[in-house]
Image (cartoon, helix red, strand yellow):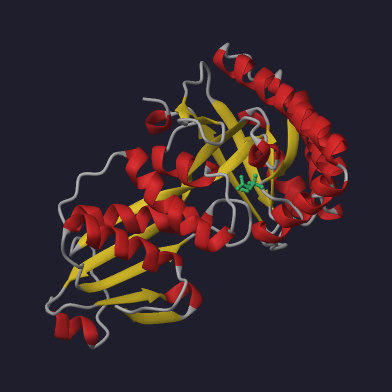
Length: 328
Ligand code: MEV
């Protein structure tokens, strides 16, 4: 395919050009407290992904097509303060040349839903351009580049999203420390239910910051309580005692309610999941909307999916963390 054909609206055909993808993620426990130095555990959701394709062309410019958000632009210069521009500049700097051609990004990960959609797009784009320009980047380097883009998207992200997505492994994350992918001793069967309510991570994180500034000791105590839950969850996961993780997720949800980041719809979905036989459930991500994560035996999956849909979930995904690629 020539650049002229691409310009005339051809989309990259399967097998043509370069392709890369990145998974969604869900925070199993520790959100918000992680921004204040406490640990969090995040896991990849392999079945829901962002995909980037790059078809090289002649010339010195890159056409960026984001059909999901009806955006098309040419770089350089691209739009001011755009997360993808940060990535393009960094990749060009490392490669010593600009990627020229057409970059197309599509994502099945709902936006503003706590599933790391922006970080997954950033990782997929970094992967595809690195591949095309012959850069060999480690997961840590890819995560670092995506983190710079995340700063443009979210203001003061902790870095947990880009880390778990770039590593595609369960990750133990403490801000400012080297992230530690870790092994599960038994598969972790999860459902992720989308409330249909989109909330800005940046706004929720800023609201928690304001409350923490107003009542520091109360919020520090809540963050410490979350940290104890997260440590216990890790011990149980490493010991393969998956079912016992359930009540700890419920406790984490209660602490997030106290922080003021839940939502009546999220509370209803958590309650519904527990009544339908889940071992545990909690809101996942920033809150005020987005998702709940549900830990449930695989045989209860269909019943839970039905119950969550009936309770208002707009979409329900299932994943088993620790199977195949997540836990090599
Ligand atoms: C958002 O997915 C998780 C938060 O803890 C924010 C962050 O870690 O950057 C709420």
